[in-house]
Structure formats: structure tokens, C-alpha cells
Image (cartoon, rainbow, N blue to C red; front, side, top):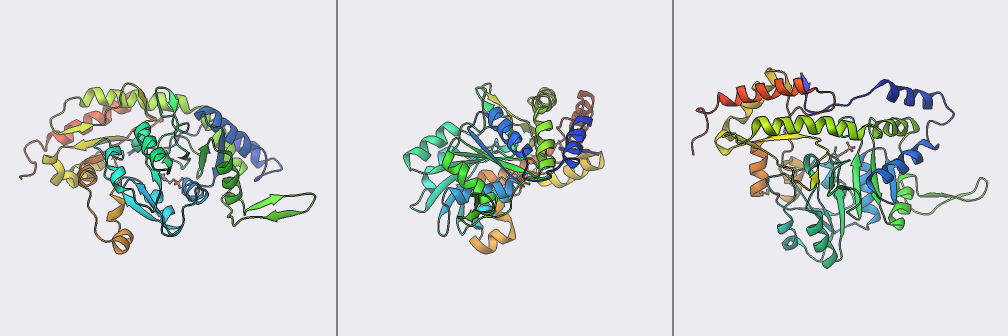
Length: 375
Ligand SMILES: *Cc1c(COP(=O)(O)O)cnc(C)c1O
């Protein structure tokens, strides 16, 4: 089975981790800081604060921007549940905005959702494709909000070669095993705002500041959301390979684009000339006449060895959300969910693998040309 995404761990990654395991500090040493400085430098942000996951990083970013009871965030339903869950964890309510057929929030629909309770706009760079950050920032500035970009898919993505992480008030990255680079589990917030960075460091580590000798002081309520030293060593080693990983994924994605161009039964997501995508996912979008046979197509792709997945069921369709907020339906999000299948695209694949994947996809989908849905 070729998974839709997977990690690539090499000998030097392993050596970097072993070196830390044999050292004096497994936690709270200097590797975490070294990794943070390298991430900040790579994306072009002033500060980076790592966490033990992107989920805790999201919670930290929401907390330090003052999101609390009765506040609202405007976000996308086409994401992993953590994006909105962490706002709910602080007592806030996620307001879901519809998307475009590239999987990203529709920036033209955001402003109508703003209320006196709105605190933040939280887009997700779906599959690695940058959101329309310029338009979103104009809305944010006009209404005195913050933009927190969940860029869990998008470390290495950019617009006109200006990296994601240098645009929003705060940007979140994930280092989960199958994200663009990995620390096993891990995440980070990058920002140019020193106050946010200081507050995030307190939030991640018990709210404690060190004073003289044994004296320390707990000044705010915090957690233990710290990254370990060996995770940071793995992350640092992986970061050096990120551009190579992206160019491998990009070559595979470009190959697919070519093979699937102008297909009658499905489309793919176009990356604009001035955009760079980390290519975390390669989504296929089935045309409406195949929506009723998506389960069959998905199953057949799996049986032929492709570890396909669907990204994502709209968050509001989960039972927790239905019980809390009632039934919701956003048209494009619904259509996107019915259309989307992510096929294998990762740095462990060769172009020969990509050719086999494309052959299987075309062969399987061809059979449904005359077995589609009736309207
Ligand atoms: C993976 C992911 C997360 C959660 O990341 P973890 O590091 O697993 O906590 C959040 N948002 C999006 C969009 C993701 O893809």
C-alpha cells in the first residue's frame, strides 16, 4: 500500500536523535531553541515558539490573542477538527465560513459573518495551497481582528517566494509524522509580535518565570506543552531536507497535473504561478456525475494498493458539533467533501511510483464513465 503521505527518516535524522538521547538534557536544553531559530529564519518570522503538537500550539495562539468565553472565530469547515476544537476549549464559538473549490476559505464570504463577538479569522492553507491572505488581512485590519493561519499543511509554502509564516499575526505549523516535516508529534507558532511570543512561552510551560537562584514565579496559568530535545533534534535535521522533500512532492504533483489534465470525470487543484505549495496533499475532485460512486471508487483504489484518504468531512458534520450547534450545511464545503479523494504524494515516492499511481487512478475512474449518477 502506498500511503497518501508518510515520513522519510534517514540515517542522519536517526543520528541526530541518538546524540540527544546520549546527552545530559532530554528536555529544556538548547536544541529546542536552535530548532525555533531555524524555523523562524526559514519562514522569515521574528519568533518561533514550539509546542508538543499543532493542537496545543493552536490553543496557545487562541489563548494569547485573548479568545475566551462568548467570543467567536471565523474558520473553515474543511480542516482537521483541532482548528475549531481549540477555540471551543476556551469557551469560544467557531463560525464556519464556506470555501472555494480549491479547499480554502472563501475570503469574499468572511465579512458578512463578522459580529461584535468576532475575535479572529482562522484560515487553513489546504493541502499546502496558500489562502488569499492579502484580502483576509484587509478584512482583519478594517475590523480590528487578528488572523491566525493554521498552516499545518504548509511549511515551505509561499506567495511570490515570501513564505507562509511571514504573513499572518500568528501562523501554526504541525510536525505530526506525516506533515511536511516531522518531530513525531510537534507543532509551532511563528509571529513577529514579541508580546505574543512571550505569552506563548509562558502558556507552554506552566506560566513560570525564572528569578534568581532557586526562586521562580508563576505569573499566569500555563500548561506543559513543551517539545522534547530529541524531537527538536529530529525537526532540525528534517528542516534541512524540507526543500528537497518539497521538490520531490512538487515533481510528483506536476506529473499528476500533466496526466490528469482536462479529464472529463474529475479535476485537480491548480497552483497559481505566483504561489508555492508544500504539496502536503494531492487532492482529486470527482465531477458531480461520480459523487454517488465515490465509495466504490475509493474502495477500488484501496484494493489496488493506493492508501487514499478523504480530506475532510466538514467539521460541522461531526456529532459533537451537531449536538452543540445544530445541523449546518455550506454548499461548496458539501460539494468539496463529495468530490475529494487524496492520492499518494510524498517524498518517499519516485516518479515511477507516481506513474503507477496515475495509471491505477485513470484505469479505475474510466470504468465509471457510463456508471455515473443520474440527476
Ligand atoms: C494535522 C493538523 C492539525 C493538528 O496537528 P497536530 O500536530 O496533530 O496536533 C491541525 N490542523 C490541521 C489543518 C492539520 O492538518
